[in-house]
Image 1 (cartoon, one colour):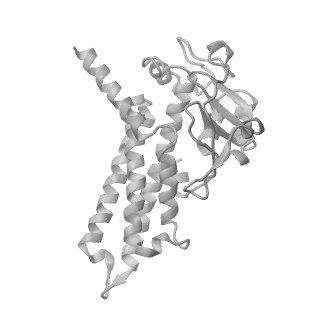
Image 2 (cartoon, helix red, strand yellow):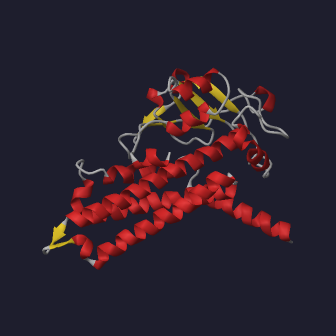
Image 3 (cartoon, one colour):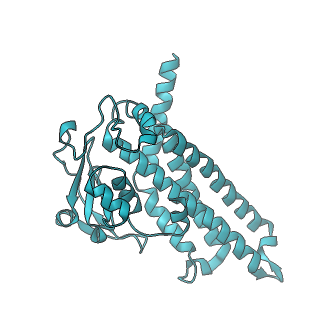
Length: 284
């Protein structure tokens, strides 16, 4: 997913990956690339690439439902997307009717995780699913995974814009010298590298621990790195960065879209604050 972000690969990649990790024919189709899946979060977040999707993964408070994309199209309307390669639709929060564990499309975890779902992650999933109110259940686990995968995409984009800025600073000359020789440009590139590498360490750590707080921190830092690095890369490129001849503006637009998906900055901050409060209460 980091490399997908680096290459600006379009499509509902996160939702399709979530579906591929489930069980049944949907998972098989998504894993083989035969079924395109997008996701609808009950919070009312925009749905991406709906017109290209075969099915929609609907995430309720705890339950998960799969519906045909044609059914979802009837209750949504197109909305303006800042990224031309990420078409969005607006929808209202809906009740899936599957909020009871026994009614979910796939058996929901209660005291133990589903052992058929990614056995190498079951022990950690078991711990995080019991983290507290509002954090348990299949839907919550999928949201966490989606936030982590989105953070990885943001990290790839942040790393790529560092490379684009440095390469351009080496080639572009001003006053007979490469612009990379000027201290102001050097500082911009150095700050971009620090953001990307700081985000990398946190994203990689969250991929190992799968802790809700670690994932929230990873999404926050990766969003910041992707957006600010793209802005600084634009500044290094000057007016050229806004043209279709360069990919810089595409990285910025995609970073803006991803920053609002799965876990916003406010939601991530609330997750971290809740974790800190819980730690203090435990110590007391």
